[in-house]
Image (cartoon, rainbow, N blue to C red; front, side):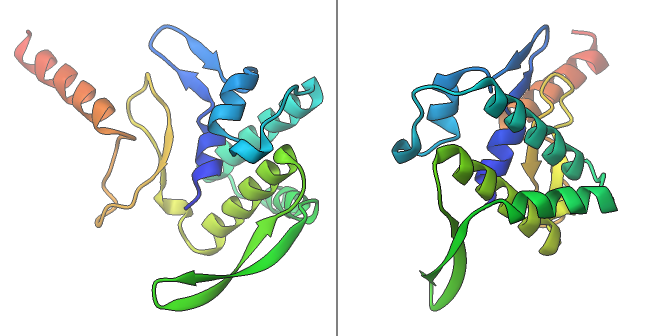
Length: 171
């Protein structure tokens, strides 16, 4: 659930001493954001700029900045996305889902817009959190029972716990 929107939002890496922009790397984009059937040979600067704008917009939503303008913008993304309905089997029942149509980038925009809309309408947006490791900054969906998760991964969790322990014990 919501993998492409989180993959897009987390394409700007905050490492301890540097920041890395992954959307400028076509190989990374093909490997992590686009499925094999939608791989690109080239990508225009306009598309990269549009992806960065979509990422900024998604981060603002994840941070709770939901306004009427944001809703208009999200509806604009949804309106420009070509979808077709599909009936899928899930466990013991059927459900209708909407699949994007078009080329790889159009599908990516459509998937991200639909995932953002689903996060908002299914009341999952409060479960979207930012990793409390300041050197990381990844966004993640907190699916823990009591919504108390603070870190995107065990690696970040262990790193901060170790730092705090060493600070307390002056190691």
